[in-house]
Structures are given as structure tokens and as C-alpha cells.
Image (tube, rainbow, N blue to C red; front, side, top):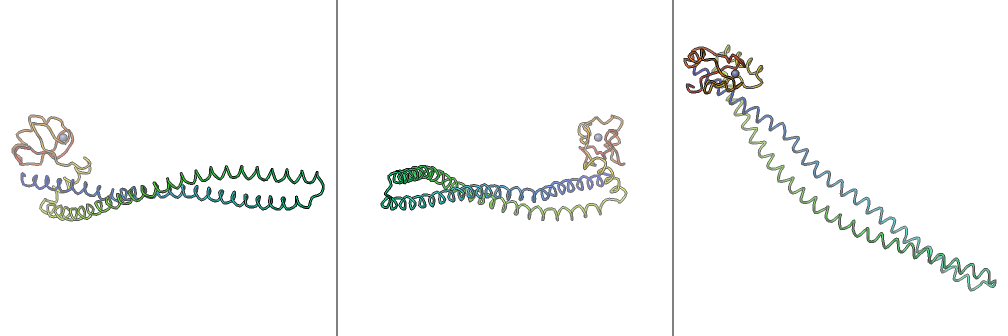
Length: 236
Ligand SMILES: [Zn+2]
């Protein structure tokens, strides 16, 4: 029975490592998605800043053309002054010119404020761009490491699966069936050592009348509490 138990213990070790590696491999796609998302988010932020910059630049150009238009109207009005004979009309054209000049100086003030905002946004675009480059470099390094790990894990998985096959073939079918049944019922750990009279599967004490049976290891013994296959740690 000792040899049979040793096979089961080894099978359990191989199967538990297989499960660990499979869960690592399953998380790879998720990790890669997370890395891509960090780049995507930064690029999106950059695009939003650029949209804001475009909008400001458009407003700036609109103001610029408003000023040009006003200046040509001022020029025309000034020309008109030369032909006007009536004082009332003369005063009204002067007022018109004054209003247009006042309007222009207000628009110019606004343009200055736009220029300041444009400068600030251009600086934040530069900062964002270098931040994205750094993130991309970091992501590339992390992706390479993940891919190398993945290849190693896939190779390890293939070896473990073939080991599990080999060991399973050495175990009697009836014992293997029993092991699998317990494994399903106990969510993974089917065979547990008894250390200092304590089952390592459920951490409860094994009744003393079972010590002798366990130490002789002639028959398959189950823990009376958790129903796992148990063995006396010192003899295996
Ligand atoms: Zn137990």
C-alpha cells in the first residue's frame, strides 16, 4: 500500500502544480488586456487635450478674422468721413469708428487670454506625450516578460500532463477512481498526511484506535472527519 500511496501523493503534487500553472496561463490574457488599457486610457486623454487645443485655435482664428474685418470697416468709415458734409452724419460716423475700435481692443484682450491657454495646453500635450512613451516602453517590457513566462509555463504544463499520465497508469484503476472521487468531493486535496495524529486535510485529530492501522499501511484508510485518503507521514 505504501508504494500505491506514494504514487497518489506524487499524482496529487503534479495535479496541484498543473492547476496552479493553468490558472497563471488563464490570467495572462487578462493581464495583457490591462496593460493595453493603460496605454489606451493615456492616448484617449491626449486626444481629449488635443481636441480642446483645436477648439481654442479655431476660436483664436475666428477672432483674428473678426479683427481684420473690423479694421477694414474702420478704414472704409474713415474714407467716408472725407465726403461727409453734414456735421450730424460726421459725428455718427466718428462714433461708429470709436465703437469698432473699442470692440477690436476687447477681442484682442480675449485673444491674449486664448494664447495663454493655448500655451498651457501645448505644454500639457508635451508632458502627456512623454508620459505615453514611458508607459509604452514599460508595457513592452512587461509584455515580453509575460510572454517568456507563458512559454515556460506551457512547456512545464506539457511535462506535468505527461507525468500525470505516467503516474496514473501506475495506479490501479479502482484506486485511481477512488482518488478522483475524493478529489472532486474535497475540491482538490484527496490525499492528506497525518502529522502528530492530526489530519493535514482537515486539521482534526485522528482517533488513537486508527494509529496502528495507519502505521501498518496495509489498507486504504480514510479520515473519519473529511473522508480524505490519509497516511502516516513518518512512514511514507
Ligand atoms: Zn481529515
